[in-house]
Each structure stands twice: as structure tokens, then as C-alpha cells.
Image (cartoon, rainbow over all chains, first blue to last red; front, side, top):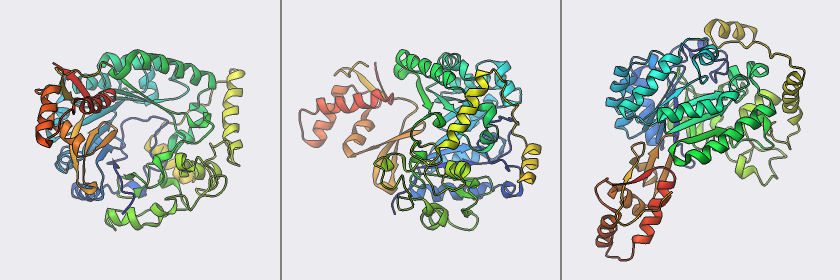
Length: 374
Length: 92
């Protein structure tokens, strides 16, 4: 069997105490589709099947994964299988005792988000007072000897803090800081006009990143996730559809990435109905965009197709209405005007100093209201 | 980055872990959000980076094991590659 997956993102729950308006979880996360969470035994079976299939890297994410009381047991099982296990958390109310227990269970790496470089902005963006817990948890990871990644989703309201965020990660002794420019899926797409930065903001932040990379060398790895609307060519999304990566959602659906569930033209299988290897190898959804046979022009004859795999299927579906066309971010796409219009709208608003619209916080009542609206 | 010297003691960064990849029949070095696939020689070198042996010790061990000589340059280049990725640190 080729390709085989290396990465599994286990979204243990969509419950979350934070309400970030750029959340990558589905808009209908509070709906019936995600309600019946997998049990401890079901997750352990998923991990065993994933390892047998070739997975080596496991991300324990959500929602907020520490809301699962069985997290320690899940980590112990994953560690026993030899998986390199990362906890991806908001650190809300995360105690040193809990982290120590997870260390004992074999957790390899901790990634903690922060929404801004100071309490005021971070808490405002998160919609929940959480900055203090995060700073405390950063220090616990140091004391316990975990490798630490500081993760920040960047957008219009916090891009000016890039330097302060890098300095924060440096002062904590973190191994990595992930500066992830907002990718427009899920809640971020819903809140796009409020979140999208201006070109000037991005250029200024990028200058800081280049300067700080030169200063810090290997002491602190600075990952810069490209703002793809502002690029000429699409990102090589997930290294290609169903080539190396899969996501299992809280209720057991398996997706080629954490945004794919929104593609309503595909049917996704569930680990409750099929073994993971069957889903990876034989399911319609995983095979639909594997390789390059599905590609239309301009991808089909494009020399870049081996590099960017036609870009992102979710973005093609969400922006152009068809998951089977070239990523509209590509300057060669017949749908690029849709991206240009969204960027131009933000530039125009900035020129006349019009305040962006208020965003919708990610929360269960808003999720249910949006699901009813369709 | 300063290249490794014969007296330097290479050790794995605590974020990195050597792991058997049964499915693909190889060893891999796993670290946050990444991995490096290793061939048999690479895996043997990494396994000897125990924070006690110096580069000279590691080279001597490998030369004995494989009945070879003059391995120092290749081993040093391999370790410098991992050090550039932040996966190997040089002591004492």
C-alpha cells in the first residue's frame, strides 16, 4: 500500500472553554454529527490501527483535549505503541499536577496557544480570560522538561505583536513558535472580513520574522505559516490529499484534513463502521483527490502540480463551490478573482479607515444558530 | 553553527526520540512536528549519541563494528546535519 500516513490528528472533543473567532473546528461543531464522542477503548483501537498503518506522529487536539478525563490513559496507550505524542492545548486551568501525570504517561511534546502578547488582547481574542493560565502552563512545561511549542494564530488584530510574541517565546525558553497566519476555513471563513490583515501589516510582520530568525538561529525555531490569500501560488495542502495525513473527529469520522468535513459532495466514513486501514485505502473520500488523475486544467498540464498538488480541496469547495477545481488562491485559477475581491475589500476598508465588522465568537449557541441557518 | 570536533560529546536534543518504524523497515528520529528517516548507518550513529561518548569514541566503535577506517569525516558530516536541524547538541 502506498502512500501510507505518517500523521494522525485526534480531535478528542469539540468542547472548548475558549471562543476564538478563527477556530478551525466546523461551524456546526455543537450539532448532532459530533455529539457522541468516541470512548477510551475506541480511541485506543484507532491509535493501534493508525500505528499498524504507518502513523508515527500523533496530535491530541480538539476543542480542548484536556477536558477528556481519560487523556492520561490515551497518552499511555499511544506512547506504548511508540507514537510521538503532542498535546495541542489552550492550557485553560491546566495544572502542573495534570502535566506531570501526562509526562509520566509518556507525553512527548506540548503545544500551547496564546492569542496575543499581553493579557488584555489575548483574553479579548480568546473570549475567555485564559492568558494567566497559559503563562503559568508555559513555565510548568519548562519545569517538567517538555519540549514546548508556542502557537499563535495571526490576523488583523494581533499581527502588530509579532515581535512581542517571539520575545515571549524566547523568554520562556520554548523550542518553537508557530506563527500561523489565519487560514480561512470554519469559523475563520465566517469571520473573514474581521480577521483578514492588510498587505502592509503582513509585510511589516514578515520583516520582523526575517530579522528575528537571523538573530535566534536554532535557539528558537520560528515557523511562519503563509497567508495564502496573499500568495501567487497555493499551499501544498497537507502534502497532497490523503498522502500522509488524517484527522479523526470526536465522533469518529475520518477526514484527510481537519477542514475536509465541510465538503458536502463527499461521504466520510467512521471508525465505528470500518477499520482505519480500509478507510485510508478504499474509502471514496480518501481516493477522490489522491494522485493527479482528478486534476482539471490549469493544474493538469502545470509543472507545479507535483509541488503544490493543486492546492487545497477544501478551499476550492468553500470559495469556488467545487472541490474538484484548482485552488482559487492560484493566480492561474479561473476563480482567482474571488480571492482578489476579498483582499481588495479589506485594503479599501483600511484606506478609508473603516473599522472591520465585529466577529462572531466560536461558541455552542452561535454554532447551533448557524447550523439552523444552513 | 560550530562543526563537531573529535573531543566533542554529541547527544540527542531531549525533544528528539529514536523510534523503530516497523511498517517501513527503518529507524526514524521523531521530534515536534517532524521526522527524519534513517538508514542503518545513520541509526547506528544516533544510537551511540548517548551523551557519554565523544565523536572519537563513536567513530572508533563504528570502525571496529564495520571493520572500516577513515569514517570520521562522514560521521561528523552526518552529525553536523542533525545539529543544523537542532536535533543534536555538542557537549561536554
